[in-house]
Length: 195
Image (cartoon, rainbow, N blue to C red; front, side, top):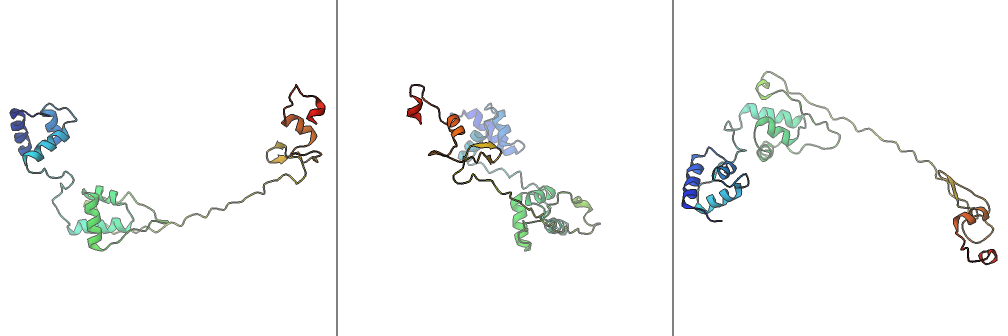
C-alpha cells in the first residue's frame, strides 16, 4: 500500500501525541477499523518509538498491601486471572510475583475457587480468610446383569433385553416362528426350495 507524504506526517503527529491507539489512528487516517496493522507496520518501518502496553498501566508497584492481598488470594486458591483483575495488572505479572514470593502452584483437586474477596482498600482492616478444601463425593455405580440368549435358543428380541428362548430346530439363530419373519422369502422360489 502506498502512503502519501501527508499521511506519513499525520501518522508521526498522532503517534507521538500518544493519545490515540493504533486502531484509532488507522480510523483517523481513513483506513477504517482494520487499519491497526497497517499503522503499526508503518510506524515500525519509520522507526517510531513503541507505544507502552495498555496492560502495564499501574505504577504503584508491589506495595505491602498489594503483596498481602496477593498472598490472601493465593491462599484462597483464586485463579491467576481473577487475581490479575483484582490487582489491575496482567496475568504474567501475577505469575512472576507469585514465583518471586515463593507461593508455588495452587493444588487443583478438591479445592474451592473463591471469587468473592473483599476489595483491596478494605484489606488492612480485615483478617485473612482461609478456605478449606471440599472433599469430592464418591460416585457408586451399580451394574445390573444383562440377559443373554441361551445357547441353542432363539435370539429374537421380544422386549428390552429379553429374548424368545424357544428351541432352534434348524440351522441359524431363530426358531421356526421368527425365521419366517427374519428372512424374506423370494416369491419365485417354492416352499420346498426355501426349507
